[in-house]
Length: 79
Image (cartoon, rainbow, N blue to C red; front, side):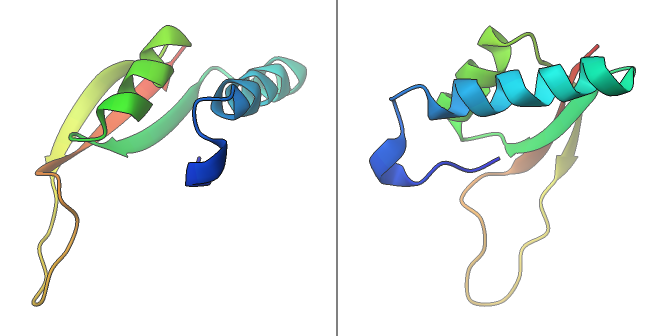
């Protein structure tokens, strides 16, 4: 899930999560999951407000010349 920086804070992320939840209901899926970097506080708060919780954490793999800013990838699940 990604929202262009110019559209953040305007409810677009919430609308996308609501569509995902609707599709989950329509397909009778058991849940919805996503992965987020541990340092992405804004996204984590959004997901938590929509009922997601961290289930697992895995260290990110670094590569030469850079990489993500966070330390861990978090699996967040909504049952």
